[in-house]
Image 1 (cartoon, rainbow, N blue to C red):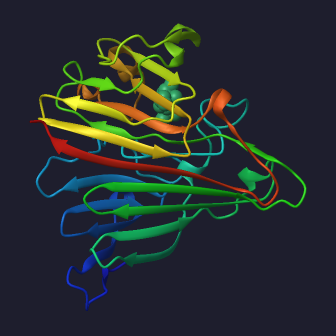
Image 2 (image 1 turned 90 degrees about the vertical axis):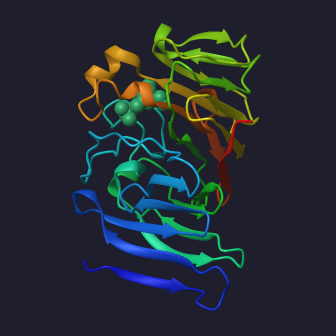
Length: 300
Ligand code: TA6
């Protein structure tokens, strides 16, 4: 496929650029450039794999060992987890949305120069067990990265029960030096200790071993302070009651063939969604909206 570049809003002061390219594994990829930042999004999983502000290092971690192939999830960036989170008897982990090729519906640039790209999950046999639904995903690239997942229950008579999660992999300078705030006092299920329920006592969570926690009933902003890269990452969200914090550490890293053995040192997942006891039930015709805004600033 040749490069097709659409100069959108040619008349506006800050034209945004959207380019259609052959990405890794020859998977179709959209490159978005704005006056502040650039991003890369694969139709495969509607997967944002790269976001970088002009004055900073990349915000998202992408494994050097990631596969870029149909039916395989991409390791890094922002996997879209839907319609279930975690394992499910006889089915793949973390739903099927992340391994499907989404349809590009439209892209547009706002007068300020931010660029939005909308995707729709095509119908698939994998969804047979669920009521009919529509899944739309809008990625907006500007000074920050905004991600908006809209699920609509198209059934006339069945409730739609599902989980969703934007499983963001953040790039960090040294995972042992970062601290995560905004979850103090929240209850969480600790997957490392067989989902034992615990309460977070710290407002500066540190990573010094495998961490895999589902924080429940938490709707607030979470921040990652990264002294090595000299920045604070801010995760604002709407329509999300769960936050998942994950770092595979040493042993799990060695078990993952699409992840480097030392890469755990450069990443942390802080994920926003509705999982476990926070799963959603949509009445016929109803819609849910999960919105996450990822931004960063230099540490003073
Ligand atoms: O979100 C954390 C988690 O559920 C971990 O338990 C770990 O399995 C991670 O997701 C990655 O899952 P994946 O299926 O992408 O290997």
